Image (cartoon, rainbow, N blue to C red; front, side, top):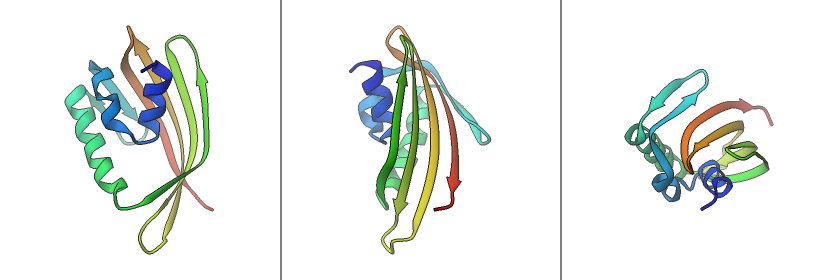
Length: 115
């Protein structure tokens, strides 16, 4: 996978396909929430997120990609609907930094927005 494909897969919640590309020293800074360090803590967070995502339908209302040689930024707007059609809209901006083809750092800005 290219670095853009890796970043896009991660932002689209296809976490498993990105696991082989995670650096052992990866850091994921969830701004305002927590800093995760190391492959195992990232995978654990992804698996927890995947469990929730199985309970909702996700629609990407916006998905913009900006790429450079070693960095990918994805600006997205997503709607999550549960079984009772309760909707939550979330705006996200994820900055992916790569080193030697491996995902070394993710910085995520996420906020729930009103429809």
